[in-house]
Amino acid sequence: METDTRPPTGGDGCLVGVIRIPVKIVAVLVVLPVRVVWELLVAAGRAVHRHVLGPLYAHVVEPLLRALGRLLTTLLKLVFVWPWVGLWRYVLVPVGRGLAWLGRGLYDQVLAPAGRFLTAWLGRGGMRYLLAPLAKGVTWIGWALGMTLFVWPWVALWRYVLAPVGRGIVRLAAMAHRYVLTPVGHGLVWLAVAVFRYLLRPVGLGLVWLVVALYRYLLRPVGLGAAWLAAALYRYVLTPVGQVLAWAWHVAGLIVGALWRGLTWVSWVLVGWPASRVYRHVLTPVGHAAREVWRTGRAAVREARATVRRALFGTPPVEPARSRARTLGSTTAADAAPADEISLPRRQG
Image (cartoon, rainbow, N blue to C red):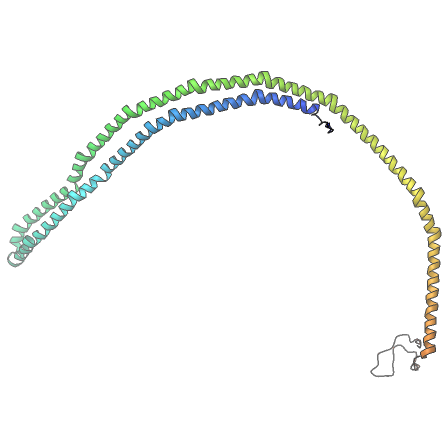
């Protein structure tokens, strides 16, 4: 039989337990009731919308608005469209056609022959006894035509169409206000009052009472306990622990400083000082001696190599140097460069 040799897992510390327990208490006593009340309000709102407001809008408000829209559309057409269409179709067009036919007949059968007759046979007496009464008759006919075309149709339209339609609209609006809008408004007011009195007001009072009770019997004691616990922790735990940590840090700094100084001294005694002595009294003289030996050997090898080269190949020919006057830069050649200010003999070879 095999035994479980795994080490036991470490449990939570006391600080985690102290923080977790008040959090659980607040979650159970505060968050859970508020969430339950919120869910109840959401369910009540959905039920009211589904069984009251939705059917009311679908079966009362929407048909009423649709009927009012159709009625207003019909009334607007009756007032602003159909009278003008009827006036144009059944009054102005026939009257215009009759006037045109009458004008053409009057001109062809009366005015043209009368003009020709007056031009040919009549004089001033004809102007007085015929044209003046004719002008008066034409004036009266023009006035009658003007009244018939521009005054009497509008008076008849106002008296027999617009005024009755306006009175009908006013009566219809009064009936709609009395028998439709007023009952619907009273019903909506009664529904709003009932919802406020029997749903919102009790729920609001319950929430206020719950909040006051939670504050008075839970949040305030828990807050006071948490404040007392925090003050006690700060005074009796955190302050001593902080002082101990500060003292330990200071002591550790002193110990580390002393240890570092000791290690520095030991390293200097065991390594630094012997190394400096060896470098100064051993390595430096040896280096100087080696440098002198190397310099001397290199010079001897150079001289031996030059001697061997002269013995084997001889010395190279060298042009004889001319004696120059000791002047300050003068020369005998016209195109030669000027000499140095101090003429010294150059080394040969």
